[in-house]
Length: 280
Image (cartoon, rainbow, N blue to C red; front, top):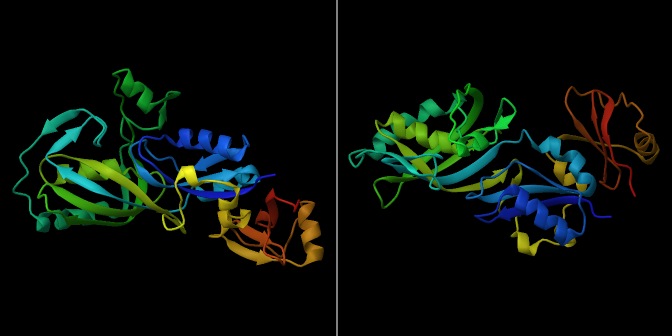
């Protein structure tokens, strides 16, 4: 049986679903899922849960994410990135790096974003990108997100700025790029988006999909390495395997319960098991 975490460096041109489908064939199991969708044109960290690890993907959903990319001033597109059709042009050659720096603070902290029309958000039972393909644009409510940091550095091209963003799940980097362009008195779009980290998992440990094999899988405990952890003795481990309540884990948030050998046995919340993974 194959269980574990795969940290993939997704190539451009692949949907997250494509990666999952290919991984199923490589690993010989249908039990593969992903956490944190990446746009087809984007590259970088995509986390796959394999086997029983699919039951743990929920604990990855709220991890902060870090991205790099390029903001191109003077041109807006239908998708807010380089894959879309041009929708507007401005002469922004006079914008200075100092002016860009002055606008960045308004996009840091707790902010609200309107989801792009080309996104997976559902309204009225349909995903926005489906409506966009039909030529329909609908009203979207702003959604709260958190941006921990947003930096922009000039490049050799005065209209292109290299950015790095660390943010909460659900943040659209395309929207940040477009909103920055608007704040500078014109428009902008995003290109070369790359996710460099999801929580503790970075591109340093990621591997291309074609290099995926069973040996590349990290143990189940890697999916919850960011949670508080409790190591129990062998007798308690046997109780955990039966789903027994454990008052020794009274935390108000999920806690990973490990065996003396470091194997993940379960995730408990307020003393009750949410996921039980007895050793095979």
